[in-house]
Image (cartoon, rainbow, N blue to C red):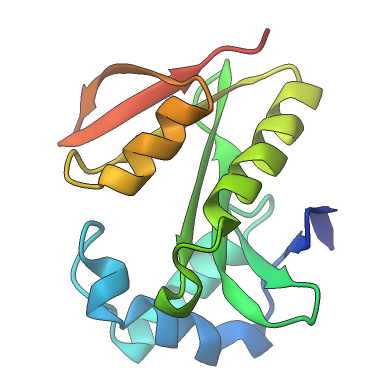
Length: 154
């Protein structure tokens, strides 16, 4: 199922066939630097099923127009008022504007559902913080060591 498409991206539900790509992403120490320890293959498979293949999913695969796996998008209910949005991308596509494009697509989804949006990130994640501020999110505090950026639905 496709969650959304636009700006050269498709956000779709994950499938068992995504296991190798997801493992490659989650086992990369550069990707996991601000998130947690890199995943083992069994941990990545468990994450695929527990976060990507639940109903509704917590994360979605991100592909470019050629169908190449770029990483995953975070999109799920945060509380009664907001959706948590975010992204985890392969290092080979960093700096190409994908995170900004995904933020725009995910904000539009949240807005259509009448919800605000939240981005959680490490205080050291300068790029994520910059994107949150660029899209009008305000820092609302810290939860479990993560900064919480919030944007209400206009």
